[in-house]
Length: 113
Length: 113
Image (cartoon, rainbow over the protein chains, first blue to last red):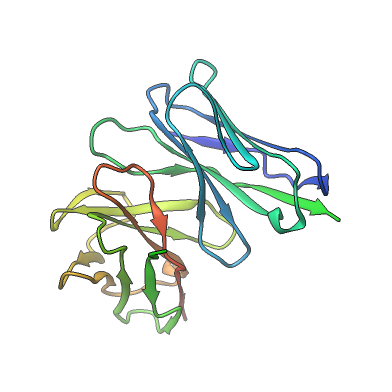
């Protein structure tokens, strides 16, 4: 059974701080990793994708991937109240053209003004 | 910026009735997906569609479900005889050719009474 695990939170940080969100996955052969943001009652919105070990930065967001530890994280710098949402980790553990995503339950982030 | 659109935003139906959920993927995308999310639960993959045929489907996607691309722009999900447990948010997503990132529409909330 292919699994993606996240701490459900809530994670509470003060405005301006760094928020660190973590995700582990069960399938060692996984190749594609995604972070989505989901506001309550809304659809998942793609924030970051990462495919290789190391860090990938986009504005205030940094995704980190460690395939040996089967771990992917998302750092949000200078957190804003508008970042308050549930952050979903999604993994494609399949080879070839199978693009099915396996999802974590999400981590709820609250940024306090 | 191009977006995936879905209609209706909310559908209420009686158990046993057929429903059709509609999606318009981003225009130059070739891979299409349906996911669902029961309230408080993980996002679940239903089906992927490429080159006018199903490429992958999950155990959830049984004979009660079908997908169709009736023309060059629409992508539909039909549930033939709805059950109470089909109540969920249904999300359509699409990917560009050669891309692994999936972009989601706003979702249809299906309520089965």
